[in-house]
Length: 254
Image 1: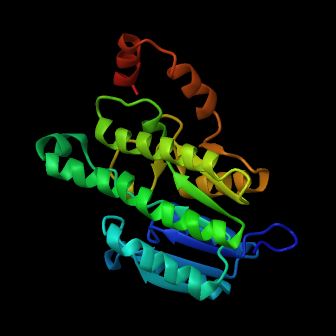
Image 2: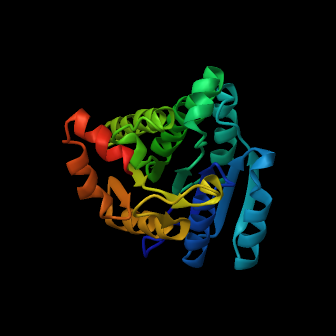
Image 3: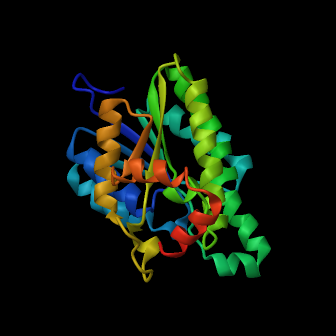
């Protein structure tokens, strides 16, 4: 449970090797967070995240979790809540970016990306929401993207997966009003991480550390949606109103 100052004391990260997850955990441990559970696959490099956090004084546990292995979600997540009894924050940055050309060349790969970015997180989040409701408090934070606000032709497979996740997260948040559980959606633009390494940075690009600060600030304020950087909020409000023919021309230049 959050302490008297409202600081997060325990966090479960679904996608424990992500750069944004690493930055958020580091930021939380610098505060008053003493327990970090990193859930992901062995190849996700969670060990290096744990090695960074443990000298800072955090208790760090690793769990094997695969977004696409939905049959295991109830067991894996349930064991975390059973062992630690109380989890303040669940952060779900799991996902892949992929490449639009590769998706179009391999429809099975495209479907797998949807499973990872959307379907798997739907399964995991419903399990998490059930446990958070039982304990009577907590926050669930989803990593959406501006790519899901309005799809572009050069990343519409990835964008559609984030659009689905964003809609699901908002609906779940509305469903949980009054239960003591809060849901927050994070919509970053281009983030300079290992996922985007080698790509040309888009306008208004940001860093994992800056996104982590936005998440911490949003949790403190009780925000339902956080944009990173903040100016993307009003920008995409306008973008969402553009006629499709004009949007195609604008997105071609993005």
